[in-house]
Image 1 (spheres, helix red, strand yellow):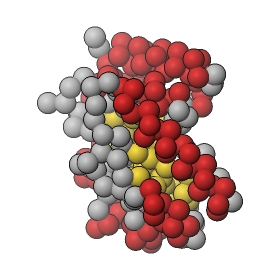
Image 2 (cartoon, rainbow, N blue to C red):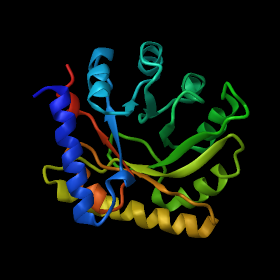
Image 3 (cartoon, rainbow, N blue to C red):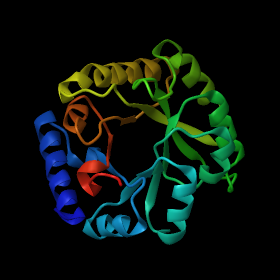
Image 4 (cartoon, rainbow, N blue to C red):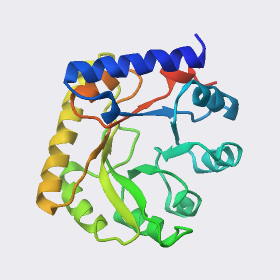
Length: 223
C-alpha cells in the first residue's frame, strides 16, 4: 500500500477507536513518525492529509525543517541538553522532557524569548527509554511549571514492548491517573497525553490519549 493509502487506513482506525471510546476524532492528534524516512515520504503523507509529524533526532529534524517549513513538527525522542538549541522554539510540542534541567535549557534557548515552548513530561516506561519515575513525577512537574518560557501541557510514556497490544493498557491507565493527580495537586491544566504507537494506539485512545505516535503503519518499515 502507498503512504496515502496507509494514512487513510490509519485515519479510519483512529476514528473508529474514538467512536468506540465515546470520543470525538478531533480530540486525537495523529503524529506521523517520520524518523529515518526521507523528506519525499513526508511530502506524500502531507499531500494525503497528515499535518503533524514527529522526529526523534535533532539534526534530522533540523534538515527536514529546511525542506519542509510548512510542516507542524513534534520532537518525540530523547533530547540531550546540548541539542536543546536546535529544537527550542522550532516545534509545536516536545514530547519527552525528562528532567527539570532540560526544561530550563529549552526555555533559555528559545530564539524568540516572547514565545512559549509547549512540552510534555516523559514518564519512564520501556526499558531502553529514559524518563521520570512515577514516584518523582509530581515533584518534577511542580518544578517545571515554575520555569518561564516553557509550558507543561501533559505527560508522555512508551510502555514495554509486547506481542499483545492489551499489555499496554495498564501503563496507559496509570499515565492518565497520574496526570489527573498531578493537575489536581498543582491546579495546572495538563490536557495532553502522548501514548500509543502503531500496534497499540486503539488501546491508548480508549485510555484517553490525545496524541498517538504512528510511524510504521503509515510509512512502512524503516530501512
